[in-house]
Length: 265
Image 1 (cartoon, rainbow, N blue to C red):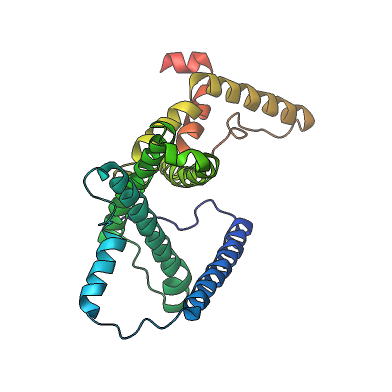
Image 2: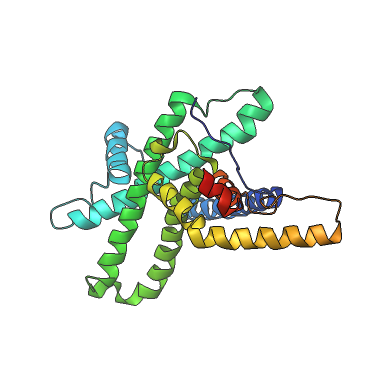
């Protein structure tokens, strides 16, 4: 059944730091929302609110469908904002789902929903909206620094910082996912259709002929030193090689076999 280990290869210190940062972000979020609410309270009463249904539909269309932005002459900018908005929202929802699975459902109720068909649908949607998030950010980069529009000249530095941080957030997520797929040999890797090509590149990079020869030389040197220090002990040439990935371990072990034996095979 398709699933994955939450917090794979992440130490306890890193997890603790993550929760501290989440608490700090939540504090500033509540603080900012409270200040905005107090500013609204200082205003004069608007009067009786009528046509609630129509007002609500219009607000939802503007907020979630970007009705005012996607209009003739501004389709590019409207789609750019739509991709960034929905990409960020869905990635946030995905993070909340993992939080519920890891910190609420499993420890308190002994339940796990992060598997099977739900997990497959989750990954397909997250990869799609994550890709749209990155595409929208690249569209914003081109709009500000490729089209050279005069209205962006005053904020180019600030925009570069914000867009750079968001791009690092989106791209690092796909990169880390690809590295995890390569290291764990996840049988459900193809459903991560954006990161899956990255997982196919890593084994070739880390287990090439040169790296295998270097690993063989290090293992041979280590074996000779251990043998000279303790004549009665015997160590394998492949015991000191890196076993971070199964493919590398097998490759390193195969190169430690003498040439005469390999030729007889």
